[in-house]
Image (cartoon, rainbow, N blue to C red):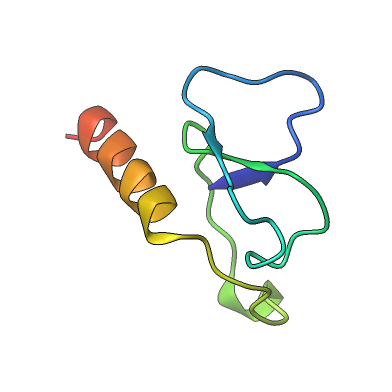
Length: 68
């Protein structure tokens, strides 16, 4: 799922990350659940942080609405 600063503009489905520092992000960002992709696990270096439960719940609700 895409996480972006959304400097090009916010989309209706974007989910703001309330605490970017806790998520390991240097600035305000949004989760863009309409942009799904896969990545090989060996390309992951380390865990940066975590999003809040309400943000996870919003992502889950979006996916349940859009993926049968």
